[in-house]
Image (cartoon, rainbow, N blue to C red; front, side, top):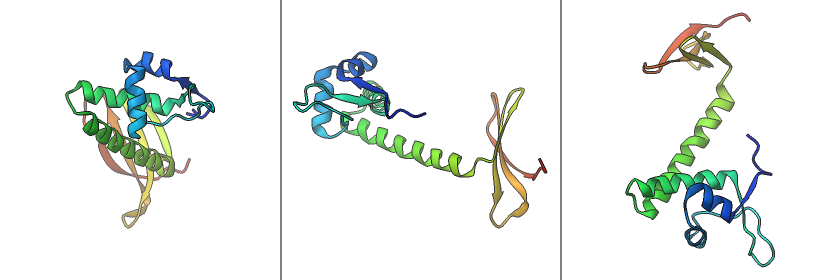
Amino acid sequence: MKTHDFLLGIGDIASATKVSQRQLRYWEKKGYIHPTKSSEERRHRKYSYHTLMKVSMIQSYVDSGYTLSVAVEKSSKHEEMTNALKHLIGDRLRDFNTLEDGYELDFGAVEGISESKNLVAVIREGQPTKFILREKSDS
C-alpha cells in the first residue's frame, strides 16, 4: 500500500488511537515517533499512516500492562519482523491460490533440495500451517 501521500494531523492520530496530543508530543520528544512533515514553526505536525499504526501498536502494549519503553521496544521488534516478512513475500512468493477453506502460497524452489519441487505453504482454517514440497507445475 502506497501511503507516502496519506498524512494525518496530530489531532487525527490522537482521535484514532485514544493517545492524547500531549502524550504524542512527549513520544516525539523521546524519539519514539517522528512527524513526516511540519510547518516552519513546527505547529502543524503531519504524520504518516505508518506512524498511526505504530502509535496504535505502542498504545496496545501499554494497555496490556507494559511500560512505555518496553512497549516501544516490542513495537520496534514487531516492525522488524513485518519488514522481514514483506521482504520474504516480495522476494520469494511465486504463486497464490485460494482454497475452499484457506490458501496456498508457492515460495519457489528450495536450494539444495530439488530444482523440480517448490516449497508451498498450505494455510487451512482452524489448522496449523503446513509446508510441503510440490512438483513444479508447467503453467
